[in-house]
Image (cartoon, rainbow, N blue to C red; front, side, top):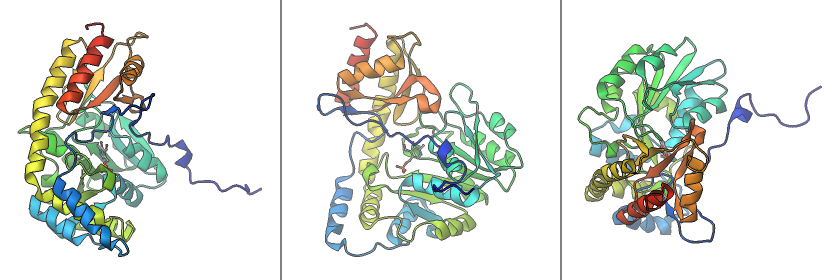
Length: 366
Ligand SMILES: Cc1ncc(COP(=O)(O)O)c(C=O)c1O
């Protein structure tokens, strides 16, 4: 008997929907929101002006090829614009890559505390997600390679990773790529790359340039402060760019996003301010929270993973409630297999000091 209710494809109902960082606290007060790794500095005023300037042309479709934006990205990074594909956030590009390269019978491989979208995009396409244990909250190249089978079609890796903040050095990433079969697509998600200040780090451009099977994704949602506009891009081998251009929507990036993205890229002083701010407050937060007796995973991104004790009343859930009662929203990361942790985005100086004072009270230090 055929069912008389529509049934989604296998895998879809196994998806736990992505739960975004919370944005409100009880009592209607404006919260300190440090739950989505947004920049505390806001977007470049030049990007805002460019966005507003498009308001008179909303009746026109955008340029479906996002040519001005791809050219601006290509100029900024010294890339071939033909191999850049823009997306409605890098989330869309992750989904499109999964859509194009994963299907029933296939597997994707990613690290256990990797970004949640990899599992969601894999299941949405009927493939099997394989989460690989990490070492000290860091992706383990040997373990990842050890989980590759003839069914593996894609390896996703966020570098640095959200929510752990750890990264793979260039050498390790190269070892991962060269240990994978040629038919396996390596997706390096470099959403936080602008924040990384390490000599042994490379965002992924080199591997994309030198191999035929590596893609790097980037976003305008973090250091560029344009999360609301949903704008990301991928640098791809020519054949992968061709595939993405076949499956993406014809106008997947909006005209205001294209205009703001071009202007944001040009405002290097604003990006530099974001880097300098993070360089100052990331180590400060890490050290000060450490002094409260809470472990903080060393991070190279614009956020830190804070580990809480497991006893009731002292655990991450209790800390979350306590902070919320003070108008502060961090991110619960139980969905990432980290029920004893909270993730905190680096905020303004005032926000950072308020979180520290609140955590200090929670730990009974103040
Ligand atoms: C590692 C990682 N990749 C991708 C994204 C998605 O970014 P976008 O806003 O470009 O979709 C995020 C957002 O939090 C992220 O943390």
